[in-house]
Amino acid sequence: MTSGKSERSPKDMAISLLVLLVPIALLLAFYRGFLGGDQPTTVDPAPAIEQARSANVFPVSQPEGLGSDWSTVSARYQTVEGGANLRLGYLTPEGRGVQLLQSNVPAERLLPAELTGQAQPQGPTELGGRNWQRYTARDNQQALVLLEPNRTVIVVGDARDNELRELAGSLR
Image (cartoon, rainbow, N blue to C red; front, side, top):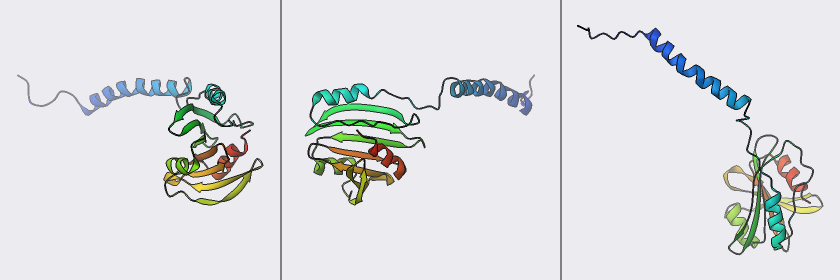
């Protein structure tokens, strides 16, 4: 007859758990070390930029001279109600997200939709020979906005001011 007492000791359970955790730790180390599991997935922005240029609905600028530590993580051109948008998403050298939006949607509709309804100019700044406006955006993000006759350019993200300025100033 068997007694009500379990035959397994805490030592047996610890060994069983260890047998399961060691392969998981090895797989995780392989994924991060050899497969670049912590690296962002990068995309080529050229097709989206070319699509926007061929549509010829607004002048298209692209960043030039950004360091190799900037990663393009998204790129999309699309027509929207009232115009078209070119969105390029970046991961900065400090690992923060920044989005570059170029659009011919009227600024009075675009800015509230992209920043917030309460977005107000915080003052001008000159970058690359152009007069940009600083804005606050949602969720403690900052934005730089360039208002031109045929398009609006927005650089927005949770990056530091110097990184926003670097991206905005690199547009050619």
